[in-house]
Length: 102
Image (cartoon, one colour):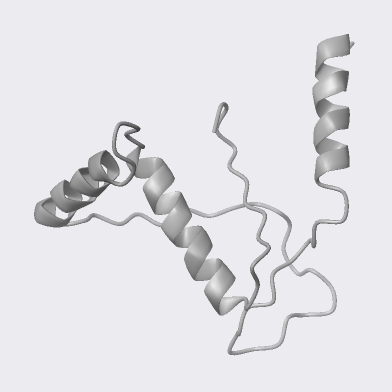
């Protein structure tokens, strides 16, 4: 049984996200199929950044908002969101992550 607190939070986010588009129109090399072929299972792509670039990124997180250091995760998610919005030709983008408290 779900707690009243859970229901309150769930209701809040259901209302807050009402009307959010369920897909982003990105320029693909092939048309999107009319029916979803695969399920919602995600995939993983690993990338190793050079140490010098990693140091520069961490330096950017420390200096981005003086007195309010941000995380590398937040910086990279923001850059990815900007890239998606740019290629999707939108200024209204909704992103989510499956990690708690993010």
